[in-house]
Length: 150
Image (cartoon, rainbow, N blue to C red; front, top):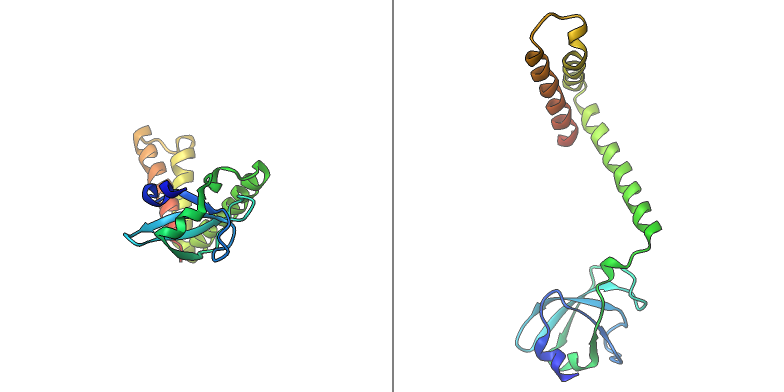
């Protein structure tokens, strides 16, 4: 496949056909030069996504021993995708709560503003627009404190 050598571009995905010097896997092209190409291993031999950080530099001539490959990012099983989302979401909630716990007084004040802004019309005789402003101030405070962390 002599054409692959001249057509290769950053973000293309390739796999070695029979080259013993490079592990049989899926690689993303992350750099090109006149005489070489830098590849990042992003998939295993079966084309499933892996995160190795392994970089390989090959001569342009060696690309004759490679073939085009599919991007492994789009072929994760649905169960794996859902499990990853839930794991990440749970971690984000924990970090948000840790951010609130890092500044307990400010967090309680922000939560109090949310409650007053949301339920204040029951006990306070102030314009609705004031309560709306208090509510959003409290929401922004909670978000700021939770996202900012400790």
